Image (cartoon, rainbow, N blue to C red; front, top):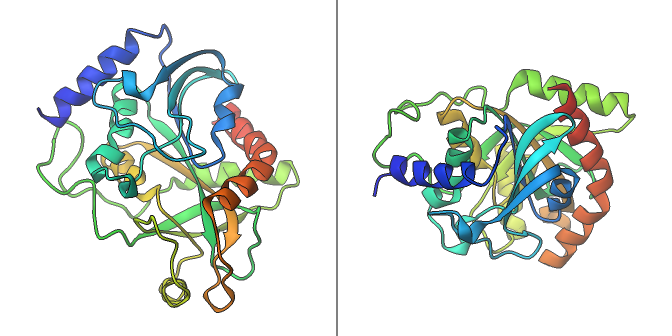
Length: 272
């Protein structure tokens, strides 16, 4: 079955469950899914009910699609995402982004919990993603290209929309909230990196590192969607001074950062 047919079947099912036409998409990472609870008049659809959707298996990912109104805009939010380390292909990981486009989404906010490698950052900071480095050795566009969805060779020179980044900075400044900016490196996981690996990636030019986001951003750009990327730095991944880390610690720090994160994203959506 072709990607286009799978996408159309998923879109048809979702549209049969809703009465609004969303324009903004949200992908909510580990510990950040509570933003979806702010959506009013919401329709919540379990992922396993949507044709061809994978199932989210990670703690801190609720596994629901939430569609409704947020700050005067109709949105569709993913409470939890999919990852290659769960055993999914890059095409499966990014399938929900394809479906969002089919629902009419033109702008997408992608969030994640990640490790900070820039020594000027601290755990609990939010970082505006300016660019990324794909260290997964994979790309969701490998294979036959569906020309009705996007070009064979999409440009990635402005993967994260410049106007969106400027608007988010303005929102943060207006709220007197300091945010970081930098480059996000994506790996497959599920292991956290060794000290030597972290030092290498930092020297490559990355400020943060995580196990998501880049595949979705590649597919969003392939389909002409405007992207805002925001990372919640949940731990400091400094190779020279690395402490043992668990997923529970990541979720705990993300939970502490949620009020600030939710306030900024909501105000951004109101003004976009």
